[in-house]
Length: 556
Image 1 (spheres, rainbow, N blue to C red):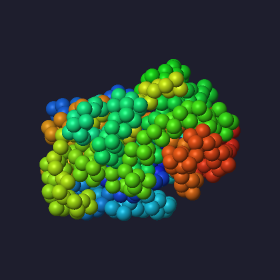
Image 2 (image 1 turned 120 degrees about the vertical axis):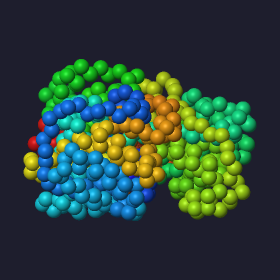
Image 3 (image 1 turned 60 degrees about the vertical axis):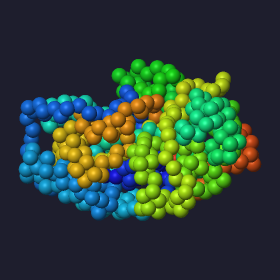
Image 4 (image 1 turned 30 degrees about the vertical axis):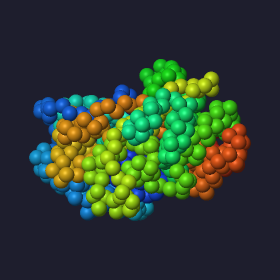
């Protein structure tokens, strides 16, 4: 099922545990407040260990007794019903499941379109007493209260492999939870945000990829002096969401000890939270505790967490050294930064793992008229192959920095949520999902995609023991996971209150342009949160009572 990425990487789980959704598998989950519907993704995701593309030989499932089911399962994930790749993948998956559950009928009814209307369609489907679908992409409507909590089953033995399900699927690479702390969605592929650069330009100017933010400023200055755009990016979802999350994260490591579940909290786990050590250098620090959303908002309300700080001032000041100074002229309104890179008008872009196959394919087909039309490139004379590479997010440095740089590491591929109905139906649907999101089912799904020449993963597959084409494995083998900065505490611009988010983005724009100082930006952002606090927590699915009693489950 193809997803739209990062992420109007809008924040669909806005400052809860998930940022939000997609419909174009070449892209990930990222915020959903501001990115065009055709390019969206957003969510709290992370990895317990740096994941790698799986390519092990298929293993015979263990001889485990499995219950036989009879009935119908309706699958309405986000996607275009006319997508040939999804259709072939489902056909292969259904055939494989039929062999082990011959009396279960799978009905494929993907919803949505290229216009990005899936959230509206899903909301309508969920509004009835008993929705028709059994499987949906629940991260698009995270406030629905009848999704199955997958955390209850992650350690259950999978009847199709003999393993704990947690061993078949990496449950930690992307943690999508609702306001109650329930894991309502499981994805299948990971994504990683990094920088792409023109090696030929760097060689010509005797430059090396920057190792820190100051070096990025220096490199950009030299590229601009040569007459080329240093960085092509956008102010729709990349710089005000991905980039601010990545770098604010370096200045907020002390917040983790504030927002975690405390002893006596409804979601406190003695084994996990009781042993938590606030190590600012741990790239997976946010996976080492249970996040209590109400404690985050209480800390903001009480002034324990603030945005008018020296740390915020330093981060914004550093950003203003690069953006918009070294970006393209239409940086604040453009979303077409990639063609500038392909035409060698810009030396660097910020993008994700899903663009690795895109760049490679485009370099081999620079004169494809269909592709040129798709990219709206008319100046074909500028299209010549060039050597290119990637580098990781250059860290900010200085005395106020609290930890190493991370990335936005989110999810793409298929987003799967189960709607709880009667127990018999829920058990049957869970059985199918355990089959699908483990080697026997997902291998069939991938093979169907490959057969249709439509397997273009946005990043490493997180279902274990899956064999992928050699070129795909080679493409992702060098990806170094840094830990995920796209978590609730790291994007105070996005609140899911549309008018407020627009105002916050404009504040940030004024700070980057020098119309207000970085210090003034922090003060105005703090004022914005305090003035609109009631609306913000309402949109997060919380009440003031929840904030005053964070030890209680929301709504209790």
